[in-house]
Amino acid sequence: MILSKIFKTIKIEFKLIFCVLLALNLLILSGCQNTSKNSDTIELTLWHGINPPPNRDVFQTLTDKFNQTHHHIQVKPIYIGQPDQQMPKILTAIVGNAPPDLLWNVPTIGGKLAELNAIQPLEEWLDKSPRKAEIYPALFESMELDGHTWSVPLATNNAAIFYRPSLFKAAGIEQVPQNWAQLKQVARSLTKDTNGDGRPDQHGIVLSLGKGEWTVFTWLPFMFSAGGELLATSPQTSVPQIDNPGALAALELWSDLLKEGSAILSAPERGYELDNFIAGKVAMQITGPWTLAQLQQSAIDYAVMPIPALKRPAAVVGGENLFLMKTSPEREKAALEFLEYVLGEEFQTAWALGTGYLPINLKSRQSKAYQSFVEKNPVLRVFLEQMNSARSRPIISGYSRLSENAGRAIEATLLGQNPQDALKEAQERLTLTLDMTK
View 1 (cartoon, rainbow, N blue to C red):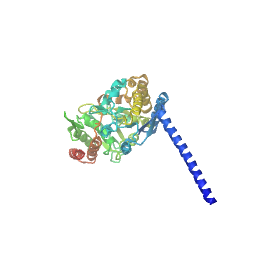
View 2: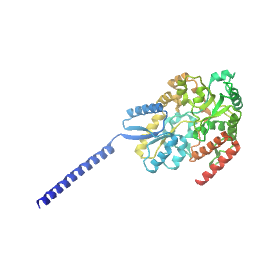
View 3: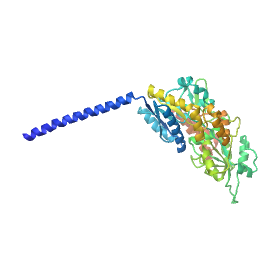
């Protein structure tokens, strides 16, 4: 009986203690929630894949500067892998209704994100902003689709041909090639058997083997220069069209360079690596200004020439854009303040000086600081000049399928298939894929 009373008393006291603890916990949680709601600071997440790591440090420093002067907004950059690794994470976040506030990625995913209703159009905000007039005109093609502006550029670049002046001089070449015929001739002159074993160990140019976006990116300037387009347009619609005369001419050029023995292929999907160029095994390589730091550290001689033209000068816009994800009006308004900062002269000049990317802001390009930087790195003039004729890749929803099939045609050609057959097969696959998704 006594034990029963004792246990009953303990049970009652335990319930009282539990209720008190529960009440305290609820008060704490309530207090936390109220603090969050009443806070004047909005914390924004920005997913990105900025690489190499030193460039991430530059971006973090510039973001910290924004945070220090915008106490009501704190932007947190989060590295989530390279662009080709990001889509599964992005799609999972969209489906789970847990997207970041801002997304850094290549502009070609814009159509897909718009189709998923995951991003906010920006034209209403941008039309009212003084920043719109400061954006380099060639970049709007990478921002706009179906009457809407889906992203804004963080930075830009394009690809040209780096070459070794010492190898040109040794081959008696006094001028860089201006057109395709001259490119083939120069490549032949630069191909040599330097060790006397009867086989060339120095080649004129390296071509990127693979079907990935890097291969497509370095090949597209030749297609555009030959008058080709990736979209066949009509008043009603734009249809992906890989099989076109310009594409055929560009494939035939690369095929001819290989058949003549004046070009070698990169390792599969590694056409961006500079090892053979630095070692002097190839005299020319298609790449961009992001390689300047590596080349300067290598202490070799190098210079840059524009992409030789067939019908017209051409280059392809590179770089990444920022997307405003759909979250809440309050968070989106705060994110727009950061976009305004990124587009501005101060950010763009510091970013260009720290990374080698080309600034997207016209005032930044004309600034004394950037002009001094170009004086010290004169090869940048080629990339800046090429922006006048640069084209963007389409940002349609089906761009990934378009690029993949173009890449397969390039790879098949480099591995020996007839260029016309490779294009025809690629177009058939693309058409079938697009029909299946309708």
